[in-house]
Every structure is written in structure tokens, then in C-alpha cells.
Amino acid sequence: MSEHAQPLNAPLDESAAKGSQKVIFASSLGTVFEWYDFFLYGALAAVISKQFFAGVNDTTAFIFALMAFAAGFVVRPFGALVFGRLGDMIGRKYTFLATIILMGLATFAVGLLPNYASIGIAAPIILVALRMLQGLALGGEYGGAATYVAEHAPQGKRGFHTSWIQSTATLGLLLSLLVVLACRYFTGDQFEVWGWRLPFLLSIVLLGISTWIRMSLHESPAFLKMKEEGKASTAPISESFGKWENLKVVLIALFSINAGQAVTFYAAQFYVLFFLTQFLKMDPALANSLLIIAVVIGAPMFIFFGWLSDKIGRKPVLMLGLLLATLLYFPIFKALAHYANPAIDQASRQAPISVIADPATCTFQFDPVGKARFDSPCDKVKTFLVKQGLPYSSVAAPAGSPVQVNVGEVKLDGFDEAALRGAVTLAGYPQQADSQNVNKAMVVALIVALILIAAMCYGPLAALMVELFPTRIRYTSMSLPYHIGNGWFGGFLPTVSFALVVYTGDIFYGLWYPVLITGVSLVVGLLCLHETRDVDIDHV
Image (cartoon, rainbow, N blue to C red; front, side, top):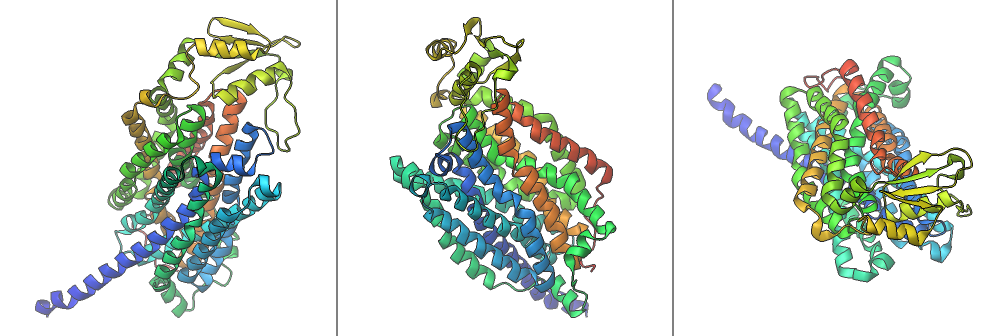
């Protein structure tokens, strides 16, 4: 009997291996395309602010563009509920097939949408509506893909298998950056006129490919087994969140890892790009190129940390990532400023800018309707500094005091643009980062460090989330905390952090948002999260 065991089992093992590879490839490729669609907007936020929010001042336009970016994240938890419920009731396969069709069509429509100059206020309204459709689709996509792959994965390899799904977000970002860079190259000066539309229009091709691939997949074996046994949930939402024993796990999953993981991901892959281009004034094409290099280097680490979590456990890897984020974000971003724009870093050290004024005469320059007037000398000073991307600090003066601007030893009373421009130029503040002086190797290394931290938090996440919940309500239960964490905590990171920088003038002040969230997640995780590596996920 033993002589025949190996040849009898070998074809089965080989067939199972090929089946697992197909599941991973098909699920991951479709998810890559879906992330590509979603992340295009982030890669083109500066262009979109000019195209669709031209009726307000520049600062407000960019904040609005980031808010529209965040709108897609706001609705992700609702997509998780809608599609999670469908996934637990009718199956994984057809649910995340529907999500990719919705995502692809919404993205294609953005490429056809007339801008503000053509149809006025209707343009940003329709844009936000399309972003919300994308968010709904992504809310159902991730849980379906992660659950589908995990339920096909052999025991002891769930971290490795699902880490391919985790890497798709980074690969989708990489694809979006590469396509944007290629379109910038081929359309040249016309990119901001019409060339920006091409990456969105290309999504229709990706939609066709991914739909064809996913149509060939079979339903998850764990789901089929549950259906055959008649144990499928008839009310997965109420089971997931209406019973305290499961709701407690949902809350722990949200606050122990999903919120913290979300800000590490968006800090490494989006906020760093805004930081380089908006605050350090680096050439966007160069910033995109360096980010692409860093992503190529860092992407395999998502798979590595998923594999590592199979060996040593999910919790140690996740907690280490949160700890490093909490401790290292400020040093890493300060080092980025030093190496990406050494001139502005040196000038801000030798001749720091401070605005001394009565706080009552200074306003937060966010103008939602384009009607506000920022006419006080303090407002004019800060408008000038923000537009130039110059870091400054605000100092409260006694009531009624006139505004004073200090640029190093130079003291200027009131707002005199010519004098202020001369002072900052004399102090060595550059209008743009000199590409020749950018230490490209160090900038790439620092972005890779941010990606490694994100990979520690994100690589093992899908396996852990699948292992926390039973099969009958898994899609619904894991999707909601994931998308609240990534949609609300992570999705608002660029908007909140940019607004904090504009408000304070300190280019590093926005980092307090991710650092506080990772710190809280670390504490909650250490106290409340249990290890899940050896859990049997076939339990109903």
C-alpha cells in the first residue's frame, strides 16, 4: 500500500498546487487592476484640483481634491456591508466579480467627465459621485478576494497565500504611477490639458481582462461546504454586528490593527508623494520616479512578511510594524526633507520663518464656496508662505498687535510682498527643489523604509482577519473593520495632514495624525489581540 501512496497522491498534490496558483493569480490580478483604478485619483490629485475645483483659491482647491479622494474612502464601509452580505449569502466569486465591473466603469467615466471650465459646479459633483461608486466597489472587493484566497489556502500557508492579495494594493499603485509617468512623457505639455484622461480611459481594457479571468474561477470550497450543510447565514449583518461576542472581535480588529495599518500604508504610498511635491517642491515627475523605484524594491516585502507570519505568528509582525511607525515617522520625514530639498532644509534651520500676529486677525484659509476674502495682513502673509511652500511657525501676539514676519534676523512689519520675497530669497529658500541636489538614493531608501513598515502591518493582515471570523459571516465581519480602518482612518490621512500643515505652517505637524493612530493601535493590539495563526478557518 505504501509503495503506491506517493504516485497516487502526487498528481492530486500537483493539481491542488496548480489550483492554488490559479486562484492566487486570478484573484490578485483582478485586485491589482481594481487598486489601479482607485489609486489613479491619488496620483493625479494635483492635476484634478485644477481641472475640477478651479472656482476656489489654490489651497482650498487642493484640500477639496484631497477630500474628493477621501470621498471614495468614506463609503467603503457601506460597500463592505452591501457586498459582504451578498458574499456570505450567494458566494464569494460572483460578488467580487460584480465589484470589479462597477469599479472599472466608474473609473472609465472619470476619463470622459467634462471639467469645471466646461460644465461648472456639476463637474466636481459628478466626480465625487464617481469616487463614491469606486469606494462602494472597493468595499466589496478586498473582503471577497482575501476570503476567497484564504479559503483555498492550505493550513500553515494562509499568511503567504493571502500576502499576494496584500501586495496588490502596492502593485496597483505602481501600475498607476507607471501609466501616469508614460502618459506625461507622451503627451508632454498637453498632459494637464487632456493627457491626464488617458490613464482613466485605459481602465476599460483592464476591466475586460480581469472580468474574463474571474469568470473562469470556481466558488470557494469552504463556502460550498457550508452551503451543502445548510449552515449559510440568512442575516450576516445582524449576526456580525448584533451579537456582542462577534461585535467585540470586530472592534478589536478595527482598533488594534486596521486603523494603524491603514495610516502606515497611506503614509508610505500617498502622503509621502504629497509631502515631496507640495511641501518640498520636488518636480512631480522626479518624485513619481523615485516612488516607483521604492515601490518596486519594497513590494516583495508584503509577501515576505505574510510568509514570516506563518512561521512566527501574525501578532509579532504586526505589532513590530506599529511600533516602528510610532517611533520613526518624524525622523524619517525630517530626513526626507534634508535629502530631497537640502536648500530649504538648511534655510529653515539657519533662518526660520515666524509669523507674529494677533490670532484674531489670522484665519484658517479654507474657502469651500470661493467667496471668502483673506484680506488681513496676517492672512496675506500666510497665503504667500503657503503658496511658496515655505515652512513657518505662528507666534501669538497681544490683541491689536500688527503682524510681524521674522526671516532669520530680518524683521518685516506688515505685509510687503516684495520685501518678504526678497528676504526669503536672501535667506536661501528655493522656489523649487533643485533636482541636481536631490540625494536620490537616500530619498528612495527612506521611502523603502516607510514601505517596509507598511508591509509589516499589511502583509499578514488578510490572514489574521480571515482567521478571526467564522465562515458563515466571514466576508461581512472582516470587511467592515478593514474598510472603516482603511476608508476612514487611512483615507483621510492626506486630507487631515495637509490641512494641519496649512493651519500651523509646520510641514511635519501633519505626522501627528498617523503617529497618534499607530500608537493607539499598538496599545490596543498588545492588550486585546490574540494570535490566530493556528486557527481552523473551516469552522462555520
